[in-house]
Length: 94
Image: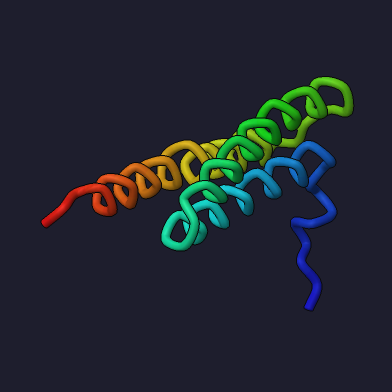
């Protein structure tokens, strides 16, 4: 199976996809280890800054902004929200 869009992605896009992957891992880790999830969110923030630097130096692709938005939702929307929810549920004594 040949994926045609892979040829059109640049290095900055690869960093952005890694950012999204770390965000999704943080979502999974939030249910198991809160500290690990927080560290993964911090790593996603570093990757988010790095993809902008790479895009400015190496150039970007038309897919870049869409991938960045997806990565931001996973890393800075869903993962922190779930992390807070898990911490609140764990600390609440019912």
